[in-house]
Structures are given as C-alpha cells and as structure tokens.
Amino acid sequence: MYLHQLFVLGLLQVLGAHATQFLDRNLAYRSPFAEHPQLSHNTQEIQNRYLTHARRQVTDASFKDDHYPTFYGGEFGNSPFIWSGGINFTHSVASGDPLDTSVLLWTRAVPISPAGTSELPDQSVPICVSYKLFTSANLSGRPIDSGTAFTSYDVDFTVKLEATSLKPDTKYFFQFSDCTNPSLVSPIGTTRTLASPNTPARSVNKGKPLSIAVFSCSQFQAGWFNAYGFAAHNTTADIFVHLGDYIYESLGNGARIGRQVLGRELATIRDYRQRLNQYRTDTSLRALIRCRYLFELRDDHEVADNSWKAGTADSNDTAAGCAFSPSGACFTDRKLAAVRAYHEWMPIRQVDLRDKLRIWRNFQIGKLLDLTMLDTRQYERDITDVYYNTVVNTIAAFNNRSLLGATQEKWLYDTLSKSKARNAVWRIIGQQIIFTQLQLRESFNLDAWDGYRANRARVLDHLYKNKISNTVILAGDSHANWVSDLAHPNDTSYNPATGAGAIGVEFAGTAVTSGSSFGSGILPADADKMSRELVGVNADLQWSEGSFRGFFLLSIDADTLNATYYGMRNISFANLEGFPTAHFVVKNGENKLSRPVAGGTVGAGVLKSSL
Image 1 (spheres, rainbow, N blue to C red):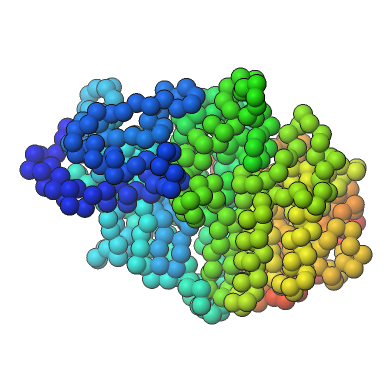
Image 2: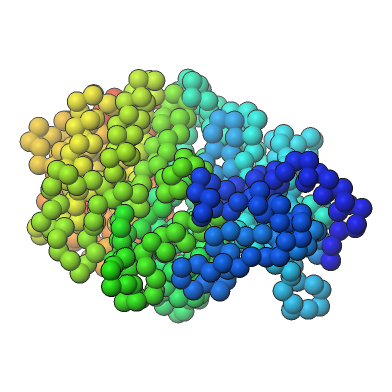
C-alpha cells in the first residue's frame, strides 16, 4: 500500500531539509489556533514524531469524543511513509477569501480502503496532495501556481492551501491530485482574484458590473438547497457571500423529503464534522462552491441556537455543570469544537493568528467597494434572548450593551472612515442579523439589532456625523425578505415616501431552506397579510415578503447598485425552478432606495407604496 522505498528515502531527505513545509502548507493544521500551542496542531512536533517513528499519542478532550482522540495535538504515528493506496476527493473543491494576488483553495482527500476489503485504511499515514492552478479552463499550458501538502485524520483529511503570486482581477481554474498517483484527480474548480485596491472603480471586473449572490440559513432537513444551484447555473454571479447558518446543530425530521440528518445535536468535533460532511453532499451546494469563490460568516447555528459570547439557548457554562444541556456538553467545549471544524471545512482566512475567534475582516475590491464582513454572533456579543429569560426586554436599550464588542466596533468605524478616505464608491457590510427596527404588535426581535439599540445608534451616528455615503448593509437570519432605507428609528427627519433623510440601505434576505419566521410553510397570501401590517407600522421598511425561500443578487458598478431577489418554487425535491420576486435600485450618492421603490411593482410580497 506504500511508496517504493527509494521514493520514500528521497521524500524523507526533502522532509528533513524543509522541516514542516508540507504540513504548514495545509492551513487546516495551523488554523484557528496557530498562536495557542496548547490547542493547535504543533506541526514541528508532528514532523519530528513522524520522522522518528514515534507512536500516536492519545489525549482525550474534556468531553467524550471517540472520533477525535488527538483533540489537543496529533501525529502521524510510527509509519515513515505516505499513503499510496488511492484517495477519494469526497467533497469536490472550493475556494474563498480571495485577495488581489492570492486565494484560498480547499478540498478533502480521504484514503481508499484496500481493494476488496472493508478494512479502514491506516489512520496514522499522511495523505500527500498536489494542486495546480491555470488560467485556462482545460488546464493547458504551464501552471500559474502549484504545490504539495499533507493532510491526515487529525484535520478530517481536509486540505486548505493559499495560491499566491497571482494577477489581480483574474479568473483561474484549479485541480488537486494524489501525489503518489497523479491520475487520481479532483473535479476542476473555478476561482478568481480581486481587483487591486487602487484599481479605478470603472475598471474593476474588466469594466463589467460586479455581481454578488447573497445567501443565509440553509437547514438540511428543511429542504433541498435549490437556491445554490439556481445561482450557480442561472445567474452570472461573480461572488457568493454566505451570511451564516451554513449548517444547523439541531436534528429535526427531514425523512419525508429524503433529508434525514445524521448523528445527534452537535456537541463534539466528530458531530460538527459529520454535519458539515453531510451538508456538502447536496448537489446544488457542491455546484456552487466548485464554480465560484466564497466569503463566509458564522451565524449562531454553526455552534448552537442564539449563541452569544458566553453561552447559547441550550448550553451554558455553569457552576452546577452542563449535564442539563440536550447535547450533554458545555458551551465552551461546543464552541471550541465548532470553530475548529468550521476552519477545517471552510475556505476562510484566519485574520489574526492570536485571535482564534475573529472572522471580521475587510476586502478592498478596487475603488469600487469595500466588502466588510462582521461577526454579530460569536465574538463579543452581550447576552441575547435565550427564550427562558426575559432580562433582555429590560436592558435592550442600555448604552453599554454591545453586539460587536468594543474592539470590533472601533474597527468597523475605522474601516468605514478609511473606505471613504480612499474614495471607494460603495461600502457593503455583510453581517448576520436584521439591522433595521422591525416592530409587530409592540414586539421586537431582541436577538437582532433591536436587542442592542444603543449599538445600532452608534453605527448610524458614525455614518451621519462623518457623512459616509453609499453604505449598504446585508442581513440574513430572519428567514424572510426585508428591504429598508437606513435611518434612526422614529426619526422625523426621515421621509418614508421620498427616502429623504436616509443614510443608506439594508437588503435582508430569506433563508435557503429554513422555515419562514412568518410561519413554516406559510402560503404567499397569508404571508402578505403580515407583510402589509409590517410595512405599515415600520417607517423605514419598504418591502416585506415571507413565503418563498431563496436568495438575492447584487449587481454593482460605479453609478448604480441593483438588487434582485429570487424565490424558489419548491424545495421539497432537487430542482432549479425559481423566479425574480422583486428588483431594487440604489444610485450613487442618493443613500436611499430609488423611487418608485422596486419600480412600483413586485412579483411577491408587499411594497409600502402599494398600501
């Protein structure tokens, strides 16, 4: 099952000369705990043990997890060889978090069992994977970049590499292969780099509008991920942005539509890996990640429902212990496992090696826009509504409550100001939850920005006081569609009819599959009754739609931002049947939705102007 001895001797000489390069090239080993040696994979130690035939160390995690005995470190065991029995690229390929000269590439390379047996491959043997990146779709000519890396059981056989020295604003094609048998290859992936920060706005994307497809809330058991497939096959989106709830920790029953989830409520590293594994079996999701690059955010369900900096709805760290949790695990343990699995499976950069939780980051896409990605869930959010306590009702307006945490909040203001100073046309803020005030019968969603009103006011104050124009906030999480002008709630200087007095726009999208907040499975006519009340009561809200699952697409140039919403006709089986539900326009410098909003007519939902 192993390489020829001469090849192995040669490989060992290379390993000895170049230390841990084949391990360190795979970012899954180093992320997200690179500066925390007690938590991270020490690749030098792994390398030393690998070369000296050391035995595999087994260290239990703080909670039972038979799948992952080396939670605090791992090694390749006592074999000096790399696997040559064949590998399977089980979950296609993906790419993400591009810069102007580099991009992250991802795959998963699992060893194949010996022919004719059900015997598991030797888990102590590392897998060697190579990649090549080209400018031609048929992978002809010399590769622009190439490299080799190891993966192993320690990181769930995931491979996350950075392709470097690339040209800005350029499309690329890439493929992984087995080092020991180059005929074993992955599917071909498509990716691209961003325009350099100083590229004139009208030259970004070779002068064509830049299009961004925006998704959130994809619950496996609730339906098929048809929105991903529709966007991949039926739009020309350049970028895919996922605002969170990429997976759900809960179970539920999807058996009636062939979507029964595996395992249990997520608690251990094995649980989170198994769920990510199962989600990536969806054909539409695999098509999406293979043909476009992604910008990802974590919402609450990547860990657990309504999570905040010190707990979640059903598991908190307490002096009495955590046995009461349905998962049987404490919040800290769950979060540690979830974050590690997320970084293994997602082509996302680690922004700060000292800060394992940080995912807030900014991408300068020429002078056209800044794409600013926030963490309004996991980082430093103060306590949220966790169902069984009502304290948030009494503290939602407190000045010292923060959704972002002091460090991230200051970073956001600095980023917005720097974006204006560098003369970027648009500021697109990707974040997880509804920013605009939404009231229905005196009730507010305290798990959204309505539960952190002073923090919202500070964001709006920064935009108004510094005259920062062309800000567009993106939101998910609510499982319904909302489009609003941005203004201080109940501010009489804002005119809902004309949009005068607004400082920006919010586009909030429905779920890929998760049930509507208006009522799971609600029909359009019934949803529209609720939407009429919502757009009537909330001054900033200009459109509401709560029945269809789907996504929205932004098309951006130096003059105009267009937003088109799409609804899927049926998510109970795999299909590509969708239709546009509404279209909105924002013009450079106007800081509001263009009137008449949506051209005065929509394919679904209710416009304020129609009341």
